[in-house]
Length: 116
Image (cartoon, rainbow, N blue to C red):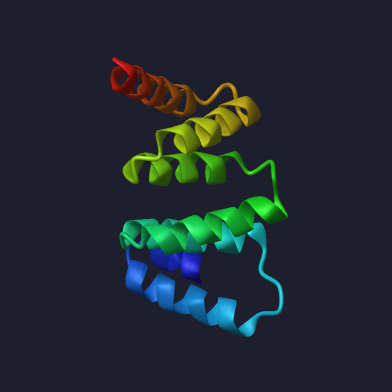
């Protein structure tokens, strides 16, 4: 149901449903944490999204999308070193995804300009 709310762009309803699920479920899947983090990003709740992405990664260290979104949050928070690490993990897990390579290039450019 939460995915339907997300598809409709109804992030508030999706958030309420996912938070209720988080509160009442003994164990959540990595996909549920990932979906919750996605909604939190859309609602500009970056610290919460970061926490839920980290939980998703703990459950599935191969979840490339979680590393990518974590890198975007790190970048938004000007943590370029951590952004680079997470972007590299995403790119290594899914080398064919151009957006991962593009993000890594952008981070490297920013790191280079801070050294100059």
